[in-house]
Amino acid sequence: MKVCITASGNNLDSVIDPRFGRCQNFIIVDPETLEFKSIPNPNIDSSGGAGIQSGQLVASEGAKAILTGNVGPNAFQTLSSLGLKVFTGVSGTVKEALELYKEGKLKETGSPSVDNHFGTGESK
Image 1 (cartoon, rainbow, N blue to C red):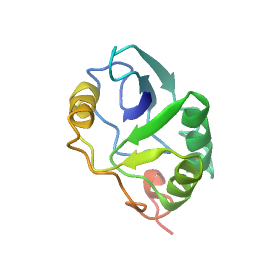
Image 2 (image 1 turned 90 degrees about the horizontal axis):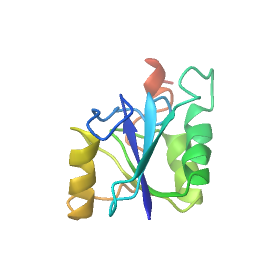
Image 3 (image 1 turned 180 degrees about the vertical axis):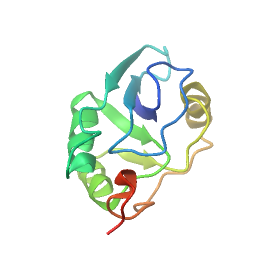
Image 4 (image 1 turned 135 degrees about the vertical axis):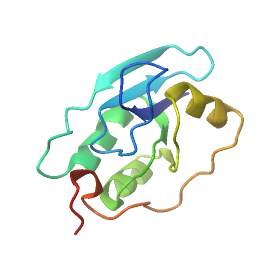
């Protein structure tokens, strides 16, 4: 099963990006083998719909779970409807988050953790 982790860099030692839809990079990783793919987020500067488009992107890469700092309402709805599990409040490095996930120490999120437009610096 692949896991998507939002990151400020492009490798397993990168720090978690606290935003989902407008994160710098998506790290798609197999928790067992640690094989990963880094995808620069094409939606980072979108005028709208970044969370939805990002959710569709990571689902198309085969991710089944998202580890991130925060997720907004539109992204959460998209990820949930696509059957992805969402874990928020994640910090540290990608590798550290992955270890916590593998150890079952992260709690699945049942709702958005921030308001609309969190990643843009403006809330509505």
